Image (cartoon, rainbow, N blue to C red; front, side, top):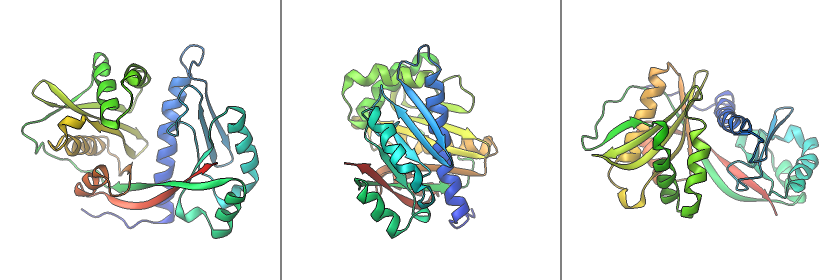
Amino acid sequence: MYIPSISIDLANRIERAEKNILSSRLDTLKQLTGNPLGIEVEEWGGVSLFSCKGIPGPSFNKVIGLTSKEEKYVDDMINFYDKRKIACQLEIIPEVTSPSFLKWLHSKGFYQSSFRTALYGIPEKYDNNYPNLSITEMKADDFAVFGDIYVDGFGLPSFLSQSIADNNKVLHKVPDWHFYLAKEGDKPLGLGVYYKQDKTAILAAAATRQQDRGKGSHSALISRRITQAFLDDCDLVVGQAAFASTSMQNMQRKGMQIAYTKAIWTRA
């Protein structure tokens, strides 16, 4: 399988995919009666600002697309998040920055807090090489299980299970979103989320119950989602993971390659 070398254009396409999936998710949640999560999404030039007051963590509260060409927006971005009492987080990819820009961000009170690795590959059709596992698309009444697996897999407090289930269930009937369960017999082990826009498929959230790791469910879910990208006639599949994590290694075993490692900058 030929996988093209990373380029500026391809890196920008991968980053747009990250913006598109977050836009789809938050736009859907915003349509709930009364916008109970207090979601706001704004576009300033090529920069996207995402804010979710009801879920104040970094997943839904961040800036994507900021480059050294958009310094003029930074003070207004700081004010945007300060007014909402949410930490301002920037995702910076390598080709859009410079030492002077990063130094300037530091002068504005930002510091680099973490890294995130983006991966990419070409969709292909996989056979089921996990005879003890089945991968099924989730039904509407499966989302209680989704919430339980998610909080267990990510080590979150159990009281968050219901809200996580509800916030994903609203996407169940939205076009181009797919939710999968990995099962051993009748026992759910893990979950995987898929989203497609145009010709790009995104491996979104995936989680496995801690006690059920090592059984192949995460790899099987990657295979199923890459196969879905193939069936959807996509020409690119992308994902993100913590550097050198099991998730990243499993994606690489399926032929995906590192595109870049983005720097996460947070305002102190």
